[in-house]
Image (cartoon, rainbow, N blue to C red; front, side, top):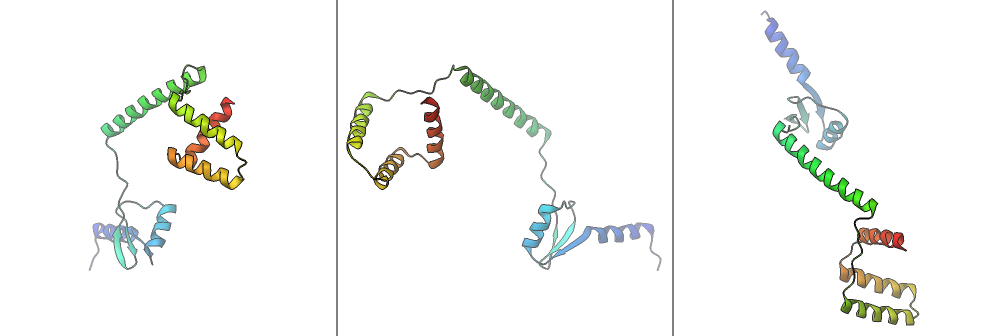
Length: 149
């Protein structure tokens, strides 16, 4: 039986495409992170043959729309940062009068007490929970207050 050139190419292509055999999905995932596999490559994972899929491609229209939106947002952020550095944007908000009175009374009572570290921590924890402030937000606010002091 004679093998034609066309059939020979098909056999070679099949052998090249059937590249790897993996014992588990975890091995395949680890290999895939380090290596690029061509779309259409047949890979055996845990006894099952899988065809590698290519990455999804965005259409030109979707890319241009996303680029335009990103440009608009970047321009807005740049303008806002520029205003902040020039001092045109102020972040100081005044506390409403009634809240300020209650807060002043609360702070005066705290000053009179000699609270240990654990009690101070509990008071601060309760205030933060009431305001709904996360630890990251607290750090951000602390940095802003340090700049103002």
